Image (cartoon, rainbow, N blue to C red; front, top):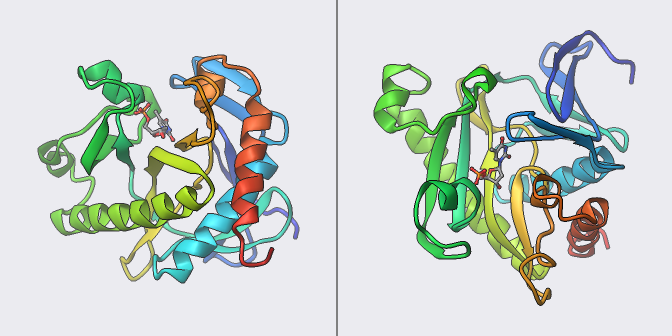
Length: 244
Ligand code: TMP
């Protein structure tokens, strides 16, 4: 498929137009950033791995009646997706305390959160993606109360499906970030990607805290073996695939 006009280049992906205005092409890059792009690097073959993992997970979610932007995957780094109006919110679901939650509270690393937390961050690099309150979302007119309720419901349903799926892979889904958009009929649709870039994934077979990390925290914290960890996630995800 020939690339149309480049519409947007993000930190990990490039979005191109296609001949069809309702369809966009997502290209997965190997570039990795952390801490709002203050740390930059490359993870060899990350684009291919994240494209493959996202493909598998979007298909599973669609089969469970979660509307997603995924149409098909046309090469090892390219996915065709539905053109949506992206809601500028990052929806984070947390099952165990980690990352910014531990930094901003006194919850210890690994503390179970029951029920899971659903948090909304403003998707705005200039402002450093700040944590929002429902009142701030309302004041900023980022989403209606009904849309927020839908985002929360979808995020928790996705959490249940992904937690169960990763459990079958011997992986604990600690937390993850989702993005959603609106289609022309204003339906809320899951967008972006689901990958070790956007999830915290802990290997249940590992014996220590450093070994268990299978996600971008290996890059963020310079733990080494980043590519290998991403590849291990993909291998386990594909081993659960109905096609295998
Ligand atoms: P946090 O603990 O740093 O707030 O991250 C929560 C989850 O969201 C974690 O799984 C990583 C993911 N995440 C992103 O996908 N993109 C981001 O820019 C950030 C900050 C986190």
